[in-house]
Image (cartoon, one colour):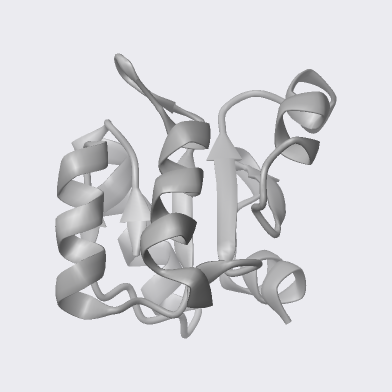
Length: 114
């Protein structure tokens, strides 16, 4: 599942990740929608944009793990920012790690959640 406030990014990411063999079972653009979709589809991995418009992807990471403990170490934070810009923020979360959007791939995701 991918959570991002940009419909355009969701479409592109879904296309490329699917082409690389990673099944995208759902997408969401807000915390509320992400929690609803996660309940519905029970994803194995969730990619979460750090900045969800007016909402926080970091906060969503905690909400998802509270509600779905099996997702611990199965959530990957993504952003247009570089790793150095978000390293402290990412290290304070229960996420498996971080991937900049410009290098997002099924392989990169697999390496983090393996």
